[in-house]
Length: 264
Ligand SMILES: Cc1cc2nc3c(=O)[nH]c(=O)nc-3n(C[C@H](O)[C@H](O)[C@H](O)COP(=O)(O)O)c2cc1C
Image 1 (spheres, rainbow, N blue to C red):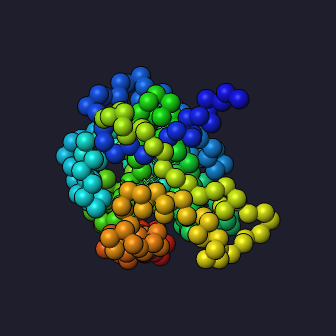
Image 2: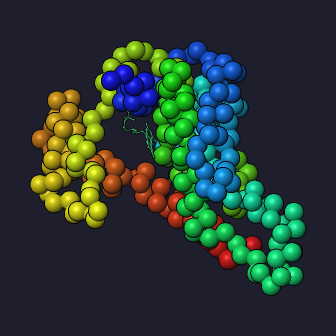
């Protein structure tokens, strides 16, 4: 059965090396429109997208996001902001808060639920952008390291209290066709999908879940301890106990505290 949407989803992979070919204004506009078609909680669009066009800011981001120079070389760099601030502004400025007080309805500050809902919104929109771009042959890569260095990121983009970082996505035409050759390996469907209730991952099930990924890494001589280590060692030492994860956890806790703090 021919299904271009499924085909597109199956062949997408992250692209980290971009050609110098620019993304023209019409294509960009279509990606923007497709982004906005993403489902959004209550149709409130709890996100904003900052299109980083200033090269100096791209350069700074490359450094702040754990030193990833590809960010500076991307043709399009979009910061997805989980944004409840715009609704706070509307509620206050359009008079609903004052009106509520006359009716005995107490004003409340955004809480954890508002934050997570806005994060959902922003991330779902980001994935629409990724897929829309892919449909034009434009590659992309999420940059999770945008969750690091929160103080600098807030100041770089003048983020108000209730508009915070969700993710960063970089886009561009792939530099070489070789980049498109191999989609990365994923676990088998029945290792991830569960019926009705959560099923614990036993060691046996984990070997089944990540076995193929371990095989691919071993073929590429990519496992630690001269390729004798396991996929568990690979992720434990390379990611889980890394300096960048320490920084991401420090920085993300700050993001949460800033949002939840009772201080004005
Ligand atoms: C939340 C998130 C954060 C990511 N952060 C980075 C990043 O900082 N740098 C990077 O090169 N790739 C990053 N990626 C891309 C993943 O490494 C990539 O999706 C994964 O290896 C699977 O490869 P594929 O997208 O080609 O299928 C991120 C992806 C996601 C979803």
